[in-house]
Image (cartoon, rainbow, N blue to C red; front, side, top):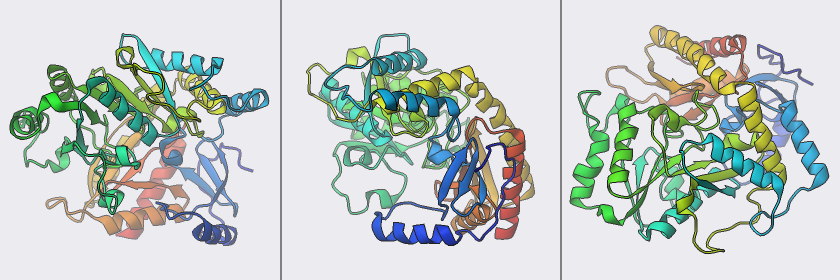
Amino acid sequence: MISGLEEKPNIKTSIPGSNAKKIIGKDNKYIATSTKCSPIVAEYGKGVIIEDVDGNVFLDFASGVGTLNVGHCHPRIVNAVKQQVEKLMHFAGTDFYYKIQVDLAEKLCEITPGDFAKKVFYTNSGTESVECALKIAKWQKQRHQFIAFIGAFHGRTLGSLSLTASKPVHRERFFPTMPGVTHVPYSYCYRCPYNLSYPDCDIWCAKAIEELYFERFVPPGEVAALFVEPVQGEGGYIVPPKEFIKELRKITEKHDIIFVDDEVQAGFGRTGKMFGIEHFDVTPDIITMAKALGAGLPIGAVVYNANLDFGTEGAHSNTFGGNLVACAAALENINVIQEEKLVERSAKMGEFLKKRLLELYEKYENVGDVRGLGLMQATEFVKDRKTKEYAVKLRDRIVENAYKKGLILLPCGKSSIRYIPPLVVTEDQLNSGIDVLENSIKESL
């Protein structure tokens, strides 16, 4: 079994190996078609390291799709789970009471932005957190229109899917979704949808909401909430200018619109702040979260201004939200992040990672853009830097060659790769990973 101290991959078989192929065959037979992008069948995990069923050792720069900010199988979280399992595994907090649910809620209210009374609703996933935020906004405002962004990903259930606009496949054959959502361009400066240049644009992408959309066809008095990711995730790890988010907040305050900050992918230290929105000096009304909250266990939460609380019992509920084992993992997860200073570590290691990625930018013309905050970084691959034509097949070859060499990566956007290793990653591991990435780029060109 792996020690977790490995700094380099160790590939012993073809990927997938013989044992992995058997499992993948059964997966194809019994499990619903999904979004699997690499034929890796994991068996053990420790820190930044994954070992598969054939004994191959990988560096994990995907963190279980952004869920494992403290790394795989952190011993303190494993111990917290064991202790809770031995006491009580579930006791529906929506109908009864239990201390650890209160303790976690109190901690979440403490660490989220906003100097006001807050409340928490527990969910089981990011999409469910977004569904809850939708219902809070509808309940409180009694309005039924929403603003979301092109490139956004807020989930795949029908309510949250109505906000999602990152890939056609997410919405294909599912029409109609929830009505009333207007999508507007995000601040994607590398590919400005208005063909403007920052900062001369004066943040038109934000101001257009009021000066174009509200003036022409979206009555602002009927808009309940605006949903935004502080860094777009599935849309390509797009980092907007600080003024963009601040202007959005100004618009929502002017028109009494709820500002919903989707931190499902950016939260819990990933960007070098506890929450991504903290980079923009903006306080949201509602924060949705999941992924890295549970350190690998399924739990999400919605933290919101207490003034927005449902006014009637039973207006919203679920059964497994706030599962006690997941709460135990989440509470210890936050303690680990704080006590091991992983937010600060994310900022420091993120600077190192970006430096290495910029070196690749200087060497390879097909690297069109490097962007990110903390350990939420990405490179966008293009066929030509002048035309910025998407290099989708090249990106896909790089991801494939990387996992064959022992580096787990995830795509995002149309032709980007995201780099989201656990926040416990070392410089040596980052160097090893980038070395594999560079070799994969060379082999893919």
